[in-house]
Image (cartoon, rainbow, N blue to C red; front, side, top):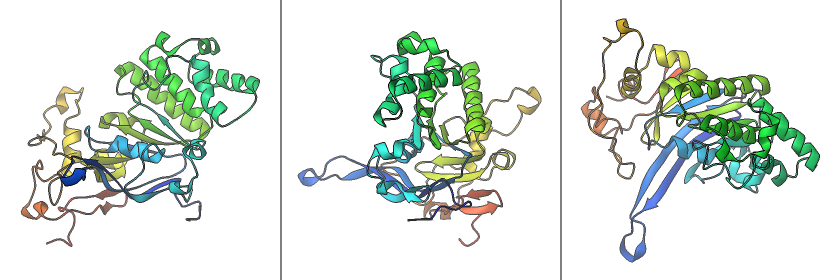
Length: 330
C-alpha cells in the first residue's frame, strides 16, 4: 500500500483499462472486446478539479464509474489516499469519501421517494445519526444547494431539471465526501442553468475543500471549473495540461480541433483557422494501429500509423501524446 504524504495525490489512476467483451466465437467464447479505456494514468490532488473532456464514446464516463466502484477495471490500479480501491471490502466502505453526480438528473433520483428520503438515503445506509439528526442534515443540504427545507416533502417529478440536479448534488454531499465525480452534470441543462450549477459547485468546493473529477464533452464547460484538463480520444489521454496552458498553447492536433470548433462571440476573431477532422470516430472495438488519432489527423505522418505515442512532458505544465513532440521516435 502507498503511504499518503502531502505531495501525493488524493486520487491516482495508474494504467487503468476497461475492456468489455463483445460478440461470440466458437463454443460461445468472446471473440472481441470494446477497449473503452486503454491505459489511463491520472492524478487529482486535494481541493483540485480535473476536467475530463472528449467526444462521446471516448471512455470518460467509464473512468468515472471505475473511480466510484460502479465498474471494475480490467487492468491497472486506482488509489485513493494511497490505498487501492480493490482493497476496500465493499462499495459501501468507499461511499463515504467517493460520490458521484450523474448526467440524467431524473433517472438518478427514485421517483417513488420524497426528496428528503433521497438525500437521507446515504445517511441511513451508513447509519449516520438519529432520525432527527438526519432530518436536520437534509434541511441544511437543501439550503446549501439553493433550495428550501420544505422542498424535502416533494417528489422529483415536481422539479425542473436544474432543481433536480441540485437535489443530486445535495445527496452527493450527505456523507461529506472528499472527492465527487461529476459525470456531465450540466449537459442536459439550458446554458443559463449550466452556469448556475457550475458556480454552485465552485462555491461548495471553496467552502468544503472538495476535489472534483469533472467529465464533459464541451471543452468550454470544463474550462469554467477545472484547474487541469485531460483531453481523451478513443480510450486514451491525448493531452493533459493546466487550464491556462491548454487554451493558450494547445499542442495535440485533436485538442486544437476541439478548441477551433468552439463558437466565438467576437466577429473579429471568427476568421481564425478552422480544423476539420476527416472521417468518423473509429470503433473502440477495433481501434487503429499506431496513434489512434492518425486516421483523422490533418498532420499525420507515416510513423503515426505504426507507433503508439506515449504521453510525454511538452512543458512544465503539460503532457502530450503526439509523435510531433517525441524526438526519440525517428
